[in-house]
Image (cartoon, rainbow, N blue to C red; front, side, top):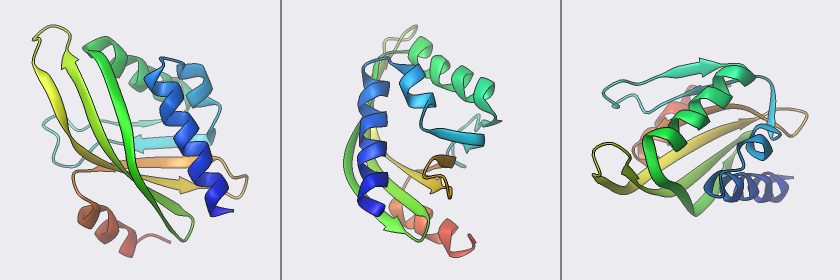
Length: 133
């Protein structure tokens, strides 16, 4: 089952990079929630389909060519840790961004994503999972 999760997430990142937000949302289960990196200056969280859609649209509206390039995936219980390279350019500032980010996806019994948490490093993600059910 874990390879299916990885394949699904990889397809989701491809859809996001192509601007196909609707296809990304199809992978989210009921009650989906997300949280940005704790060290982000304005870390946001969201719950539900509408808020997830708004969060994805915000990324595409604030940045030109914002992308996530998967570097690797690890399965830990019912979670998938996605190590990613993010890149883009601030739409207003023109400032390029390029750096690592780690997403921790919780996968539900229906094989759909229940939650997403972002971290700056894989060590932070693993530490957060130590307390996860």
